[in-house]
Length: 311
Length: 311
View 1 (tube, rainbow over the protein chains, first blue to last red):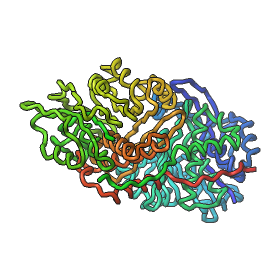
View 2: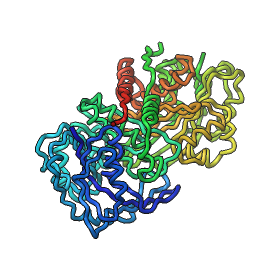
View 3: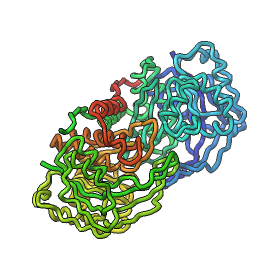
View 4: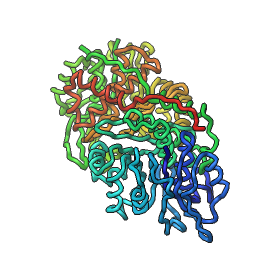
């Protein structure tokens, strides 16, 4: 069994109110692969890089069981580059630069060994590319997860809707859920989005946590209050990676198990934001991760006491 | 044993993107008393009204066990009036009018029977008035809860800090916690605010839920996703009322019980926002409330599975 993941591998330049990180490793596929690799090793990566990308980074991922047969290297060209500046609240940011570079011509051809992957994670990318990947699959996956963003809703809505119709899980943020559905209430938004295709909807709310909607049921994973958020970049991708890594490992896509998967995702995201780039995702220990999962449990658990009304 | 509650009783005019409610019953003390009265009947109310306030409303509260000996009626004057307009997201609002009216001269004199109350809920008001109430208590209460807002941080910080030093529980929103502490991280903000006095800090985040901090421990109560938020006015007061009503009823101020109290508070707030004014808080049935508490449980509960790392 394997996880197929597609998305960017990139350089990011990050400015925050608390510090800067110029030209550090980033990209959805990088974060997803790192976070998933803690739980599952048969990860088939599909991405594109220029010859400026770090060979060490590729090797580090290979050592974690990430298959690079689907990685395209374009000589003489640069990797995707994104520069952004976070506002004081760290929940919002401005994009300063987007240099597509190699990503502009990305036309993924899946290696044969990728085409029957059971778990598919479509990282945030042009819907056309996401669709092209789905079209190359030779076997219906057990679960397809799609991450996307408002940019594609504004610029490629028609194709995006076709992709959404084909996936099992959609992950977007609250404003995007509102935009996509035209509903302000997230409960109503979820009902409309389910009708577009996805059986599961994950609404990411940054520091405020994440909501999982499925068949009239709702689960809420809190954001873990951490002492210092250093850099939120990649948190959503780490979330997706932790989630799909856990799901592939347990091979169970029930709602009950999906809830735990969301906690695994939130756990990886909570580590991600505590340092720039992937710094904090590289050397996590098992006990450290379990400890954090227990923190989520403590954060969420209460005694249910049902009192009679005062009389 | 009794709950002493102090705060405004008022008229509100509410504009939201989904409808308007001109000159409806409002006020912190009104919401607190209604929400608390489901769980506890010995509530001693301290407030001030003009002769325009509804006698029916007073009687309805009396029938729910609310003692009105501490209610001051000022003939020929008007009750406190607030008009506000909510933005599209319903999380932020503009104040259109604040007519203090009788509240301008409020100088509460607690009846003798109020002075030994075990549970004290200081609703949002001038810190001077909150202090004057504390000064009249003849017996140390089991728990004092203070609700306040940024307006008093901007205009009466010195007195506010003196009040904060004397209370056990402080309830404010996330921006106010940041302002009060000068810390962006809520974890760091909580540590600083604990040092100002309160053993418990509740940070209210509107639709995103509420955080409870105590002695290095954190609990998070999600906001219940409701299909339609009609009017958020009074949600924080309903939260406080549900919380203190539950605490007085169970007479247990441990962290474990405080967590359940936060869920009771969140439950009352979730009912409050589903209609204008106190409309939805007037006739709640026991089973309806229990059902909602179970919804909070379902929303928060997940199976903890600790996996070994992939090898």
